[in-house]
Length: 473
Image (cartoon, rainbow, N blue to C red; front, side, top):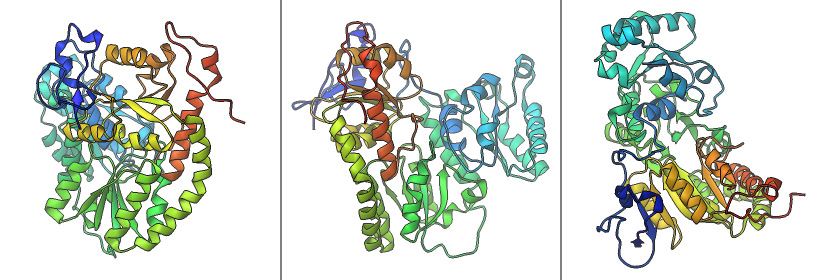
C-alpha cells in the first residue's frame, strides 16, 4: 500500500490542503506538501478553507442524542442552533415525538449579558409540564452559553429533582472539537455516565445483544433486526436508533455489543467493555458479503453458526435475482463517495459487488483508522481526500468525471449543477439501504440516478452527459 500525492488547482493559494489529499499508487508514501507520512486528518480546519464540516453540537445533538425517541430534546442556546438540528436526519422510530418537536431556550442579548441558567431551568420545567409523557430531557450546550459560563450541569441536577425525571446535560458546545466527531464522543460518554446501568432489570439476558451505532435512517433497522432475532437473539438496546431512555438504562445487561458505525459509537462499546466486561465486535451492515459476515460473527459468539447459514442462504436467494439485474446495468461505473466517515469505506466493497468501482473517496471527519481502511479497499489510482471543500469537490467532479456522486444533503446541488448523477448517502433518497433488502434499494436508487432520462436533455458546460443504460422495463 502506498500513496503518490496530487495537487488540486483550486488549492494553489491554500497549500496546507496538500496534506489532506493523496492518490493510491505504487512507490513511496508522501503527502501533498512533499513530506513523508500518512494523510492528515482529524485536525482543525485551516482558516479560509470552505469546509463542509459540522460542529461538536451537530455531532452530539444531530447524530447520537437526537434519535432517542421519548425525551425532550432541548438546545440551550440561540434559536438558530435548534432550527439547524430540527428534522435534519430522518431517525425514524415507532414514535415521532423526537422529530415532531424541537425545544430551545432561545437565548437572546439580555440572556447573554445576565446569564441563562434561570431561563434554562424554567424551560425544562415548562416543557416537562407541557409534555408529561416524555421520559426525560436531553439538554445540549452551545457556543454562546458555554462562553458566558452557564452551569448547565447544575441546572440539570436541580431540574431532575423538580420534574422527577432524568435531565441529561451534554457539554457539546460547537467549538469544543475540530468537527462533529467530537460531539459523538461527548454524546457517548455522557449517556454512558448518566444513564447506562442505572436500572437492574430481571430476566434472561443470555442471548441479548445491543446494536450499537445504527441510527435508523429511513428505517434501516427493519432490514436486519429480524435476521438477528431469527437466530434466537434478543436485541436489548439500539444505540440510538428507535430507542427509549429506559432501554438505554439497561444496555449493560447485553452479552455482546454489535458495533456498526465505528466512528460515532465505538466509544461506548469501549467504556462498556472496561466497566462491565461486555465484549464487542465490529461489523458492517451494508452490502451482501458484509451483512452475511456480520450475522456469522454474531452467531459464532453464541454458538449459532448453523442457524446463521440458513438465514444467509435464504436471504441471498431472495435478493440475488434483483442484484444481478442491477449489476448488469451498473457494471463499470465509476463513483465518487463523500460521506461522514465509515460509510466511505463501508460502501467501496458494496459498490464493487454491484460491478462499480470507487475512484474518489472522501470523508468529512474521518480519523486515521478510517483512512487506513479506505486505502486498503480503494482501487489502485484511487483519490482520497480528507474534509474536502466545495472548490475541491467541484474540481474533482469536473476533472475526474465520475459517473456517480454519493454524498449528503448539501452537495446534491453542486452535483446537479455540474450534470453529475447523485445519490443521497447521508439521509438516503428512498432507503432503507442497510441489510440484504436494503442493498436492493440502494442499487435501485443508483440505477434511477444514473439512467434517468434527464441526462439526455441536460448538458453541463464542458462535460458530456453520462452514459446511460436503456430504460427500466
